[in-house]
Length: 209
Image 1 (spheres, one colour):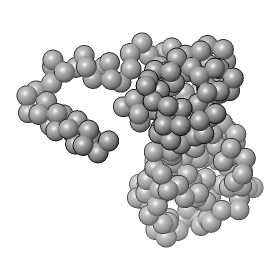
Image 2 (image 1 turned 90 degrees about the horizontal axis):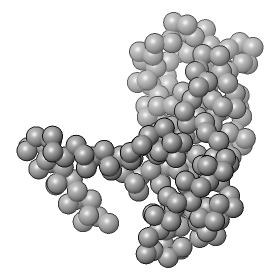
Image 3 (image 1 turned 60 degrees about the horizontal axis):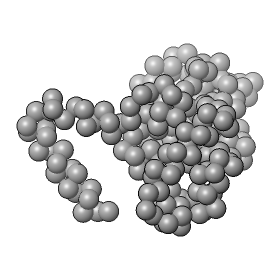
Image 4 (image 1 turned 180 degrees about the horizontal axis):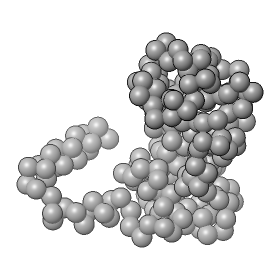
């Protein structure tokens, strides 16, 4: 997993006091003190803008900041959660809802049903291509023989029209309804002008499938 391959101490870094020199990139960042202890981990789509007014700047301005560029912004949340789980920085909250037990029997059972539902009439190769994994992986998930990594759940959430957190809430049993179910229930209360915009967005999405 990425958190086992990357050493935050070996990444590009600058003193936080020189934050105006930070690059404008999407990344995972690590705030490191003078004893080489990671005090805080975060993610952002623009590092320079994020730290221009970060609420923890005064608390950490004598530290340095290193960063790991991430080209696909939709993976930021999942990768950040993995680094936080590994390093447990003192200034991060550790009840991170993205750190879940994907190996539990209940999770595997619900995830298996979800994969079967997503697959529908598609072949294993087709759904594997949609999710960026191999077709044996899809089969193993369906048969509850292996568990997904958090980053595997990002394209699944996209395919279901949900955020990663909404998908995890569903799989953990802490959300009774999916994002699509909530959207369908809210249609009656959507203003006509917003409903037209929603229909146009749906039409555009269907054209690009």
